[in-house]
Amino acid sequence: MVDYVGNVNVADPIFVVVIMAMASSLPIVRFTEAVIAKVSAIGKGTPASWWLAILTLGPLLGSFITGPAAMTICAFLLRHRFYGRKPSQELKYATIGLLFVNISVGGVLTHFGPPPVVIVARVWNWDLAYMLTHFGWKAVVGITLSNLLYLRVFRKEFAKLAAHVPDEEGDQKGYRPIPWQITGIHMVFLCWTVANAHHPVLVILGLLFFLAFVSATRLNQHAIALRPPLLVGFFLAALVIHGGCQQWWIGPVLGSLSKWPLMLGATILTAFNDNAAITYLASLVPGFSDALKYVVVAGAVTGGGLTVIANSPNPAGQSILASRFGEAGISPMYLFLGALVPTLIDGAAFMLLP
Image (spheres, helix red, strand yellow):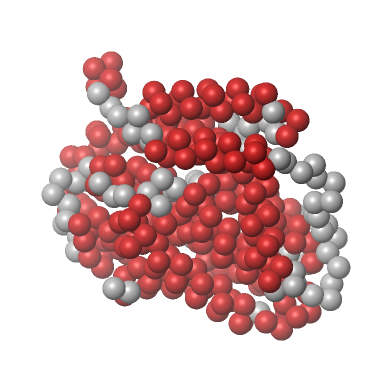
């Protein structure tokens, strides 16, 4: 057992833990919120402009600050800026369905954002240019079309919500401003981690310096939330360690599927498994063609919003927004229905666009 585990490369799980921890820091969160607020101001800060800015820009920023961090920021902003205005149940589920799907799809602009991409990018030699040209721009098209469609369908309700005063505006008047130098240094730590993603020693060294810096500037920080990154990291590490034992059956199964069945299968399986599990098992298939590699990742991220367990950031969004759906919480069936249309749109964007 020691020999087997000793030969397993756990660089990707370590990278995910560190990048998630850094991205959840207060300066990065505040910076992201400020960017979304600036975009919303273009539409004069109406409920529709906040809704559109959060669900469009927030998920795309997940490519740089990781999906869990983007989910947390977007869910809190939606809770304060949108759900506080008491929208209808239909719009509530349409919004959370869009949020889950967009977060899953919006991370594919880079090769270091979402776990399902991180786990295969090194194995398949996918870099930033590859992700942008093959996945990124299609994700932007899919997210934009989905948001505009829902905005069009619920346009009358958005007009009514503009006249309703939210019960929890959640403004930031009491926030202490964070010096730009501290935010800039946090950005440097993020860049260091991404640049040395395949060198765990340097990644861990960067994390230690980062934690020391956070402690030294604690008046402008909050406690680094390590629980979510560790849970995701342990899951990915276990996946890497145990996944190799599944190659004997997963290889023939996935290798026997053609393009469209593989896309459909990856999307459906993702709804019942974390999408990182699907892509990692696909990376174990020998002789997988480039076209099939693309399809399985596209299917995995496309289906990441259909259920709470389909994508690792989803439970965070559920916990933040559950109270806005009444005592019964979020219905799995209505969540699925709210996410179904954007899932179909994103799947079509990945498969039909050149």
